[in-house]
Image (cartoon, rainbow, N blue to C red; front, top):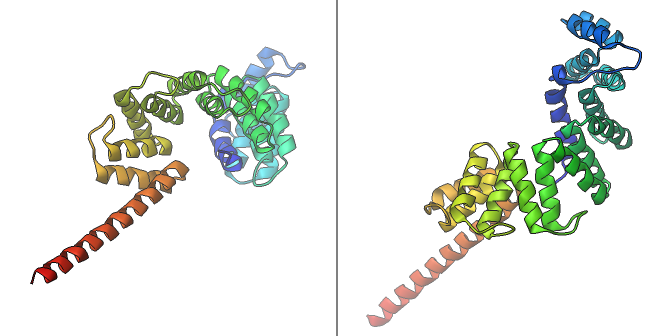
Length: 296
């Protein structure tokens, strides 16, 4: 569930490149001056000047630029500066940079907390991931709740998992399904996959195989390994969809290759059953041969 360094590094390039979405601040800089500085950012040189003049958006842009160039030192410097100027996306970027490959998780979490305080959903989500990493599940649950409240779908989905498993919060399947629904509505396909599984199992919601299959089909088509894993199982069983063993195996194998452990366990079970069935066919074939010989 963690894989936080990979997620943070990937997220860094995506979110920081959206520097235009960052809010800027700074007590000593007027709103008009900040807007003028923001407008000034047209390239590396002008963005550097704009950053120095108090444009958190420009600092965020530079952090993204240097991250893409793999200049971590400069990227950190500009991300930290942008964060101090009140840009939540820059705080997220600084947190991601400090969390890279066994980095300074303590400092990373501080910057992610600042991003979360600025109502940046991804910042809250990854703050939760780092809290989860150090075993503080109650703090992680609170961070995921903040991410969900900031309309960040993965936060809703993770909180649903916590309620389903009773991690950091009391177990509650109804609340789990409710949060998966929120995650799905916020375009998190893993949330759609979990919600689909809930409908298939009748966990926290009324059982509805067809709706469960439909949700997993949408999730799988959108690239969710969990959605493909769930749909693969349904296709193999013919539950809510027409039975299609070949497609079920294909989706299960694909989901496993994408790192979904549920799919890998299902695939291992399929291989085991196939070998058992094959051995049984061979045994039956030998028995038939022996019976024919006796008749002669």
